[in-house]
Image (cartoon, rainbow, N blue to C red; front, side, top):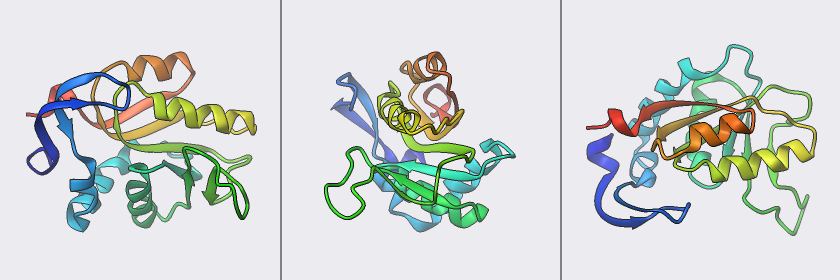
Length: 162
């Protein structure tokens, strides 16, 4: 996967940090075989009592869709901003209330996107306890999420990727 999606240069992350290594998630998410393989590696990280997989917009959506397909668990899709039409919701797909929801993300740096989704969910009485990502850049997300009461599990950590 690192051969496919790891880029070097100068990049600005969502958190605003500058880095010389960037993981272009769309390179592994757009390859059906690689995406399936990555999702399969996520399955052992899911708690046994998971009831709904909730993918974060936008990169978490292909990952959660494939993970749902492989596990048979229903998926929900968490928008960055609630839509202004139709149901006007920020969450689409499977019902979340009263269920054990696990947040799914692709690449995590500071954890800002997960924390934003967590705030929306908690405001609606939904209390995820864990998040699973493909790559943890080890840039503070684990600590920030732990401080918010959420455990982060990663298939790959930045320090483990050659």
